[in-house]
Length: 305
Image (cartoon, rainbow, N blue to C red):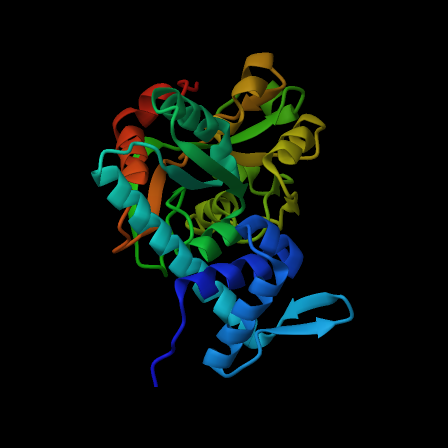
């Protein structure tokens, strides 16, 4: 039996679920609270299941509500993309850009976005900087327009377009004995050193572990830190070595507080990628940003050395 669900009901439900409040949803949608309640009641009747439960003055999504909230966001995003695409074809240039960026890429991604927005000031945007796990979850849900990340996911059907090199290097503090020796090193000579790094599953952590595994070398479990900034501070303090993207250490190299070790087979040569779900129809704004990054991205990021 087909469901008789209206777009208005979807919009009202999404707002109530996002705010966990009928009142705030009504304010956002410029409706009265009784009108919001009626839309939710009709939606639940059409679905034949409760989407919210009331505990005192608070409301919570039921299991069915959580599932429907996920679906409503996807549908809402697709409708928004369609509206934007149609308006663009009619000659309108404004639009919204939703970008998700790996935390390591934030050191240059904001500059790329700033240059693009300077050329297209009528565009609005949202930029979310997050870890790899959240990137993969968002890609799986097809939420962002585009994702900037290092290693594309292997288990998701995505389009991944490389636009710039992403060398991974080993860094130490400027007083570390390995740097003071001023000698080229082998992977065997650093395998027993203490390393600091990101959480399990992060791109740089995976690359570091794979680097030693491919050479049949054992690496002690690194000390884990939740951000690149903390890792750099830990290395400066002498807590250990770190494998990092060279794009994250520009200021520290210029200041002389971090040093890149010369190690055989390093740096690890990787790429930065623009990633989106295969089959996704990019909005005109998103496609314009994509082309901008592919054409000019590597030219706008300061060269590292």
